Image 1 (cartoon, protein in one colour):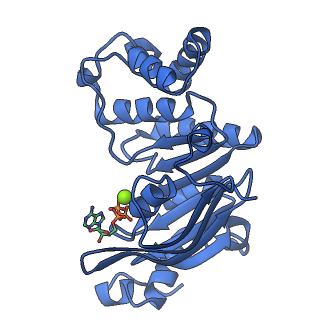
Image 2: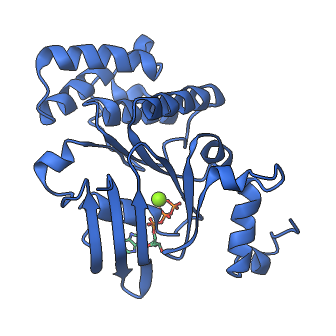
Length: 250
Ligand SMILES: Nc1ncnc2c1ncn2[C@@H]1O[C@H](COP(=O)(O)OP(=O)(O)OP(=O)(O)O)[C@@H](O)[C@H]1O
Ligand SMILES: [Mg+2]
């Protein structure tokens, strides 16, 4: 049983095919990078995976079950692309609120909140209202919220966006630590170098279709073919970067 599975999923918005016959399976303990240009269909796929957006057709399973099942949901930590938090809450209060929603008890919420505020580097601003937070600070809150209930599967929509270089390094270590704990991590990203460093496997999406799915060990195999070049090559082959004049010889 896979923690995360999509089979022949389709989703169209008006005339736009956002997800096109997409099949993917992520193995337990795998760190999986979901890549693609703007509008490729990453967020739509993630929302379908979580049962937040219905697909037109195809099958989605989280640990073999419907993602809308309450028990299944508890196993997922989700960080949205754009989060809208109640601005007058403090970071600790927000985490406590999410903890209660997840059915965590008081002492567990307290312990996890204290741990996570340190892990995401917000301990010094824990007493400040979220309306005073910068973009990157809110991003850190989102990371903490996704990890709060110690889920087995993390689904993160562009977790690196808005983080400063130091925070990126910390967050990379955080993901690697989750990996060592046996957690499954699925995240979308534009940060190819980060994906290359931490992912076991990446998929590249173009116009809703998976145009590449491979192990990162294979990608960096000969030392020359890094993920950036793979990304360019795959999209070029699909007639994208060549048309835009961005493509170069490998
Ligand atoms: N609610 C919606 N209504 C209409 N079209 C939508 C809707 N959501 C997404 N789309 C369209 O579906 C396509 C895929 O969008 P999606 O947000 O999934 O892309 P993405 O890969 O997450 O892009 P980005 O990297 O910019 O976040 C785009 O063409 C987008 O305009
Ligand atoms: Mg998106």
